[in-house]
Image (cartoon, rainbow, N blue to C red; front, side, top):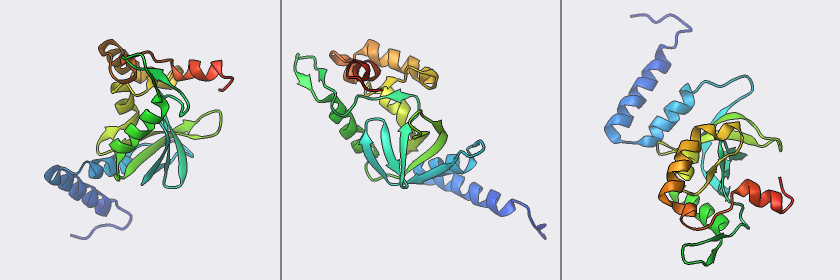
Length: 185
């Protein structure tokens, strides 16, 4: 069979093979790569993937780009929280370490959704089939962002809070409140 020039048959065949390989091998990173390839992006928005360096609980560097996870607000690095035992904990650093451990050496794939007021890339990022923002919030390691972008994660935050999961097990000041009290953003 002769394939007309300009058709996407080769790309479709590659995507089909990757999909089958992902199912057979259980390789979640292949699914992330497929999501990245097939994700709709608007004008000027991009998708990218690579190794990640964790800056803080909601900021990464991926493929040389500084990325703020959309919809989440994690404690600042200098922020402390009070544990169940009443002891002060360096929760900002603990969340950074937890995110770093969760990602490990896996490839992180990101889909840009916009920019914040500091002109940082806002993105939804995934690793091994998990949305990083949703994982942080569900595990009580971050709050849903107070703005519109946090709306999809508010139910997960309420569940984590009600269960006393992660930061919600002790006393935790929302990061936006903590920053305002210190004259930050």
